[in-house]
Length: 80
Length: 350
Image (cartoon, rainbow over the protein chains, first blue to last red):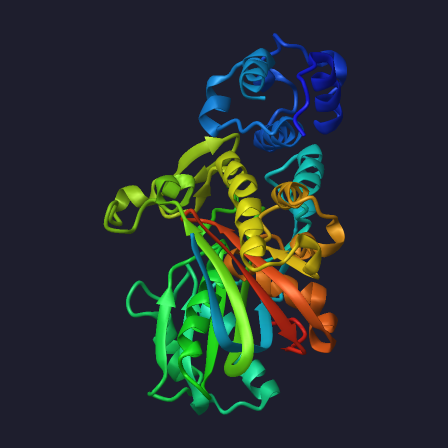
C-alpha cells in the first residue's frame, strides 16, 4: 500500500537504511554524493529504499541528474 | 507474453561443477573495510569461485555431464539433443555444443547447438530443450548451462569483479508421458546496454582501442572487452518485471503463490532478490539463496542453488518449483514444474 509522503519519516528510515549514516547529516538541501562514505552501493541501497517504501522507480539517469535529497523527494512526491 | 506449456518432458537429474578456488570478499583489496561490510550486507556475497586461467565454461559443464550420465547409468550414445547455454563459449566460431558432442562421446545423430543467454539462460534453455524433446518420444537430452564470467572482468573493477563467480551445470531430461512444464518468457532489447561487453563484435570490432583501459571510479578501470553493468537499471528492471512475470505464470497455471514449495530466483544480489520476494508478498523460507558462498554465477545460479540448497529435498520429495531467470538482454522468464526424485549429484569441485 502506498503511504503519504512524510519528510521526517523519510529521513528517519533512510538513516537506518543507509547503515551508519546519522540522521542529523540528512537534510533536503544535502547533496547526497558529498556525504562521507557515499558509493555506488549506497546509491543502489537508496534506490531500493525508495522503491520498497514508496513504490517509486528512480532511473539511473534521474539519479545522475539529481544533486540533493530535495531533488529526489520531488520525484517521489510526483509519483506516489 | 510467450506463455506456454510443454508436455511429456521430465527432468531426470542435475549436476553442477565449480572451480575449487574460492575467493573472499573480505580479502578483496578494492574495498575499504567499511565498504566490504556494506557490500556483503547489500549483495549477500561473501565468497565466490574463480576459474584459474585455462579453465573454460565447457570444462565445468562437461565434467557435470560426464558424472551425471554415469550416475543415471545413461549411455552417451542415447542423447539426441544437446544445448549449451552460455556467454563464455570456447570460440566465437564454431558453437561449443558441437565440440562438446564429441568430447562427451555423443552420437553423430545428436542435434547440438548453442544459445547465447546469460542470467535468464537456464530457464530459456529449459524452455527450448523441453519443447524439442516433447516431440521426440523415448528420447533423451542434455542441457548444459554455465559461465566463466570472471574471464570478462578486471580484478580492480569494483563494479563487477566482486559480484561474478564461475560455474557450469548439466541437466538430464527425457520424454515422459505424464509430465508437463509451463513457461512465461519475455525480452526487452531497448535496454540492451544495461549489461554488456561493448567491443569485439560487429558493431565495435576488436582493435587496439578495445584494450585501452579507462578509469571508471576511484581506482576501478576496465577496457572494451570487459563486462559492465548498470546496477540501478538492473535493479529497477528486476523488481518491476520479475514479480509480474511470476504472478502471470501462476495465474495462467491456476496456481496460487502458496502452492509453490520453492521459488528459485536467479541469484543477482541480495537486495534485488529480497525486493522481488517482498513484491510477491512471500517469506524468505521459500526463496533459497546461494549468493553467500557462490556469488552471481550468471546462467548457472538456478541449478547451483538447486544443488547446494535443496539437494536432499529434490532427491527424496516431489516439489512444486518456480524457476525465474532475469538479466542481460534484457531477458527474463519463469518456469513452473514439478520435481520428481531427481538424481542430484553433490557439488563438483574441479
